[in-house]
Length: 480
Image (cartoon, rainbow, N blue to C red; front, side, top):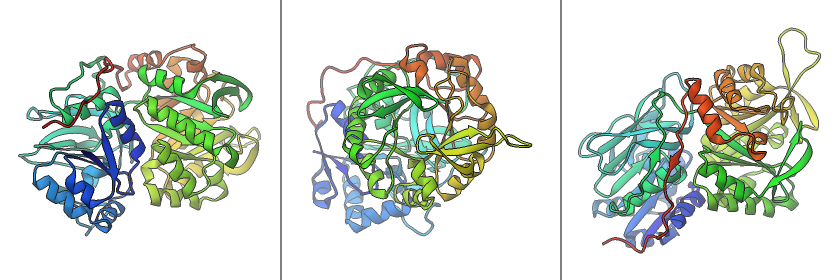
């Protein structure tokens, strides 16, 4: 029996979806008895070290996990799960971890935005017998700087180098999310389950250093269908969200954003069903927004399969919501979406007004100032949409991008105006860490690969598209 540990601080839906895609039987449990009987253990986690350890100790899972690891039971630790296996973390001084991996996790440092949200290169040491070179999806602010033998390491550079995976016997600890790392991540889980089960994966060459610029198709959803418009108006049907998300993921998309543009309490069941449908068909990060007004709303979205939660109008109305969400789920889960319109009568430097309620209402807030305040309140990412460029294919508002990206030290996603592949490179040069587009993809004007080719031609880092045959046979049982 494989047991996925429910710590109460983990987004389980993405892990479950990955194991279901692999045909691996599993049980989700927070019972020490179940973990004590498990033949394989998965320890996932998101959020803060302190709350993660508190969840383990309150359930009596800390002792049983250490006992099972010491007895030789294979364990897969994911993201916060890896950090909990360490001696401790500078995020929570004085709080001991499980102590399985020697070392203290420290905050990422260097000329980079924190948290790290997106894909990055994983390079295994020569001694690592399980992890292959590739690109993985990260969402972290802390990491382990080094690990000594007999642990076998894989490393990633984000500002400075850190340990992105550590292997000893059957224990594989990943700072990244293999369940959200496409076929490369699924292949790693296969190898952990059974080293003889390895998919043949080929990848485009990519020798450009740096964290890849993310390419993100956006699914604006209304009543369970993807729609598109211009300047938030003239809505038209663009397809089924599950079909589109799967196609984009296979084409090399780095993330999917799902925004319910007509969010209301009445539409909540449809919204959650849409997220579930998308999660079941792609294994890359999902950001979901629309209708999030409380912790309960966010928790329901995470349970449905979202990895990050986007808030817009509700955050402007009640800014403390950002702090509440970040405290409950971790900064890396919280995206503050900002719809900004250029101020026509501004004297001096250009400014942008924050709009809410689908662009229908002005707030009097300055977009750059609101982005800075959102970061202080706990936002981990800014999704910045130019209302003036939305759906126009006229290119990004680089002035807006520069103003906001220079104000914050968290990732900024550019949205609005992307009309051709080179616009993505323009946005990245202006300060965007990711580029979101809808019309060019939904209308078949350009592909994700076209956009990534433009990034490469501009000398910008990107995640190469991977190709792997989908396995037609499911995992038949636990190896002896």
